[in-house]
Image (cartoon, rainbow, N blue to C red; front, side, top):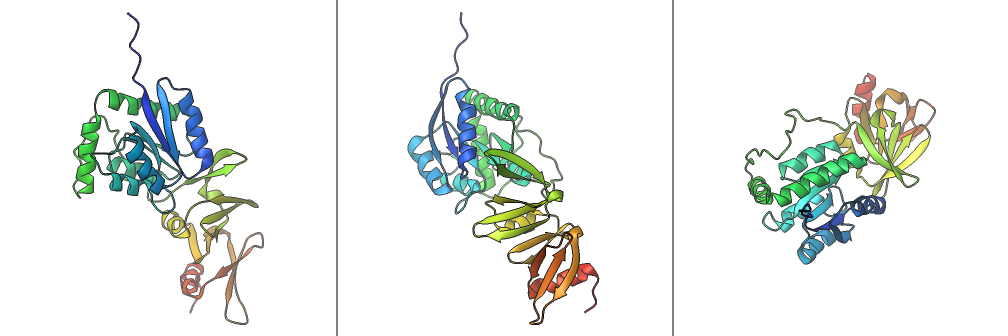
Length: 273
């Protein structure tokens, strides 16, 4: 007898980056028995789409303006949440995804093989009716408890990495992962942050507060509400006539220093008050 074909999975894609949505759509088109029922570019639309379309599986971006992927999960609720594969540029969010019982996660930039692993795992959970177990874990987490361990959930390291080591950026239609040690400084630009790497500028949609929290303070310091610098590039602290300060980095770039941040910078430089 011929092998039984898998049932068609109805998939929803949620990501605020058009290129990320297009990549997932392209990958899913190569999978058998898949119907892409819709896409959403923010958390608010994601909630509406999940409720209206009732997909079997959702690829859900963690970091979106206004409402995050985790906010979406909480609003939908564990009993109504479809199988979920979180998509994130930051590893610590990937680990947090397992805390809310995701089927799997993808860390940008991911390759085709990693996508296939996550997709196969989600399909297997659905075929084995493993979603009841995941929803029980999700409910326990949202109620403040600890989920019971499940055989289908990969082990999460006991000691999680405290700070990010790489940041995903888009370049010429492709996603590239930049090691943080290559970043010279970061400037705020509205809802975006500008990463400066060896004279090149890369825009990412990330708040400065989040970047400050996720970058190692032994390597990076926020010297102004709109500026973060790599400390090993700091060369000179200049004081202007009006009492304003500027930081000069190796290579000659100057960055403003706010008065509230100056004392911490001076302590790092070993400057006496």
